[in-house]
Length: 179
Image 1 (cartoon, helix red, strand yellow):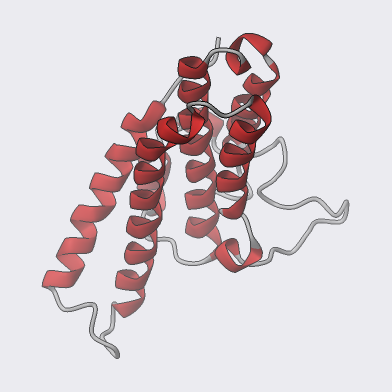
Image 2: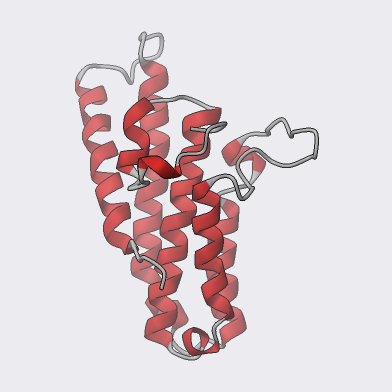
């Protein structure tokens, strides 16, 4: 059975970044030319993305009610897939096998996202709206963990050794090449 993080994990991550964002504001990092303006920008990006996810999960039950399975899945998959557009995560050098450095089985964040996506193959989940909502939230949470991992590695490492703990990823699951 899959471990469910649910929206509680996203709320914890959001709270951690929001606190740091507020400190950055208080220290004046939002001013252009400030030495740590880059940190402010990255925190702002993460806080906004996480707040959007939380609001989306809050609104989702209203849109799942009365829709058929296909439309419900379109809402869910459409939202999560937009996280991984090049304008949101940048472009990555691929290895000699043309594999993406983050979207592969050696990355535990990717594996856990795939596990959540596989749950939508279960007709029992698809036919039960409350259960569908639970797994939709799980997919959204896991997609954001992967998105944040990519930002941490691709753009600015603002958490360093604390990142995996914040994402609740056990240390023995770290991906060597993209941790």
